[in-house]
Length: 152
Ligand code: ZN
Image (cartoon, rainbow, N blue to C red):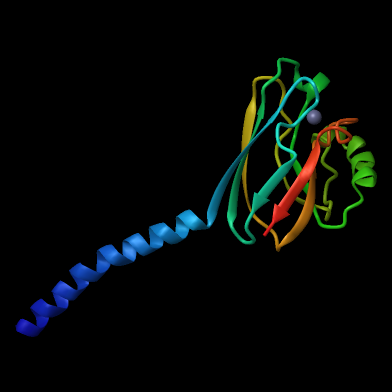
């Protein structure tokens, strides 16, 4: 009888510790990024830093007023070594797919294309350590709307 009571106590005592360990782990493996795009064709961040393997929740906010057709923005993370200019040229032709070339292996993650006042959120796993480019793939925007995604 005593033995059973001791076992129950061990269970009761160990459970809260397990729960808090899990919480701590989840917190350190997630990061939230908010990036804004405006009517002046600019992102407000030129550099984003994350850690390899963590879950990145990225929100893109369009703080402008212009509609999607005139000043659409998205956020596209490109695989290491991608020729940005060549990719952007390819993306320009993918108008029916929000300027995302279908089946492209050069894309790690991307958001929907949005217009003024809208926002969109995606979740993805940070790739291996390295330096990656991100752009807006709306025609002509990549020259100004670009930055470095640095994975440590
Ligand atoms: Zn744009």
